[in-house]
Amino acid sequence: MIEISHLNKTYHHQQEKVVALGDINLTVKNGEICSIIGPSGCGKTTLLYILSGIIHEYEGTVRIDGLSPEQHIGKLGLILQDYGLLPWKTVWQNVALGLEIRKTNKKQITEKIDDVLNQVGLYELRNHYPSQISGGQRQRVAIARAISMDAKVLLMDEPFSALDAITREEIQEAFLELWYKTQMTVVLVTHSIEEAVFLGNKIQILSSLPGKIIYDISNPHQGNIHLRSHPDFLKMCTEIRRRLRSV
Ligand code: ADP
Ligand code: MG
Image (cartoon, rainbow, N blue to C red; front, side, top):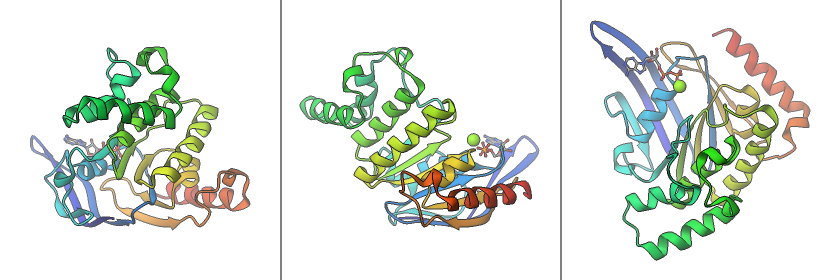
C-alpha cells in the first residue's frame, strides 16, 4: 500500500523558491491503479520522482508497504515518457537490463525474459532494436522490464502520450489485461481525461502550483474493457473536465 501524508516539496533554485507540491495526502491500496491528472507544471513528475526514491528531500511522510521509497529502490518500476530504452540494445536485452543490474544468474534471466516477452506479445520481436518497433511496442518493452523484475509497484509518467489515438486505446486495453494478471499497484500520471477514467480505480486531480489534490473520484466501473461505451464513462469525463477547467 502507498501512503502519502502531508507531503510538501519545495525546489530551491538560486534565490527562487518553487513550491511544487503542497500538502498531498493520498492512499493507494495494493493492486489499485491511481490516475493522477493535472495541468502542466503542477508537480506530477515531482510526485513520481519522490515515490520512486529519486528525490528524497521533501517534507511529510511517504511509505510503500511501510518502508520509505529509498528502501524499495530497484524494486519499483518507473516508466518515463521516453520509456527509458537503450537504442543500441535489442528488445530482449532492453527487457533484461533490470535483472542484469541485479546480478541475477544468466539461466534465470533467460527463462524469465522469454516468459515475460511471451506474456506481452513481443517474443517474435526480441531481436529488433527500439528504432525498428512502434511506439506501442516500445511501451510494452518498458512494461515487460518492470514485470520481469517482479515490480509490485509501477510508476508511469504519461506513458502513452506519444501514441496516436487508436494505438493508445489498444495499448490501454492491453495494459489493463496485464494489470489483471500481475495485480501490480500502479500510479499513472496522464494528461488524458479518458485515459485516467478508463484505467483508474481512483482519479486524483491536482491543482496548478503548488500541486494539491483538489478532487478525488473513485471509479466503480474500473476494469470493464467496454467502459468507453458506458454512459457513466462520459459523465465521469465531463465532471473531471469541468473540475480541471476551474483549477
Ligand atoms: P509536471 O510533471 O506536473 O509538469 P513537474 O513536477 O515537472 O510538473 O514540475 C513542477 C514545478 O516544479 C514546475 O514549476 C517546475 O518548473 C518546477 N521544478 C521541477 N524540477 C525542478 C528543479 N529540479 N529545480 C527547480 N524547479 C523545478
Ligand atoms: Mg511531468
